[in-house]
Amino acid sequence: MPVPVTPPTEADLVEIFSSIQGEGLLIGCRQIFIRAAGCNLTCAYCDTDFASRSHCRMEEAPGAGLFRNLPNPVALETLSAIIDTWLRQAPGMHHSISLTGGEPLLQASVWAAWLPVLCSMLPIHLETNGTLAAALPPLLPYLDWVSMDVKLESMTGAATPWEAHEAFLAHAGATGWSVKLVVGEETPDEEVVQAVRMVQALAPHVPVILQPVTRKGATDRRFGWLMDLQCLAAGHHPLIRVIPQTHVFLNLL
Image 1: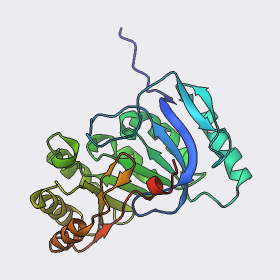
Image 2: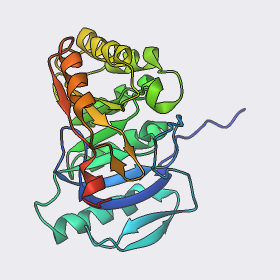
Image 3: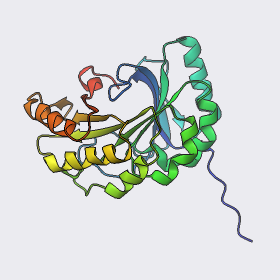
């Protein structure tokens, strides 16, 4: 008789740290970031190290910038003890926990086991590339915010996974969702129009964030094209915001 597959109860993590959210609707909020290893995409502009490794680096204290290594995979008991200590060290400071990556939904079975505990400590914010729709429903009861990327071909170097994004966006709740488009001067108008029309059709209450691409630690400061792009997008979906990666020029993690 085959041995039944037991879902993993430990996570393959890259780092655990406390910082200010630099993107999206929760910009400026202090969060505990849990960065998961692995990603199912290879975006040309990505500057995040999400490779799996033998250890996860953990900040010694919230915002200290000093790290020590924890062996991978990491158990829930280890992570919850860290978070509990940080919440006692800095009561009231942290707004939420951000699950980020890589792509955290690659380890959805772990989060399904962990989130009932983690959401009792702080609200949960998921940052995702919006391509793994089947992994999302079991987690939705525990998520307060979902920041979903639409991966445009002009930026990633690979065909935009429109069908996967549509399936993911179909799960959008009434509140707490946002869609992010990383854009550059080379982004065709047609790509942006298709993306915002998709959001308008499937989730008209969800804001779309235009995020100018960051390259070599900086964004292009010639923003006339971005103003024009916002104007174009707003003609198809009224909830358009422009928010750069603020943590880059604040020199934060």
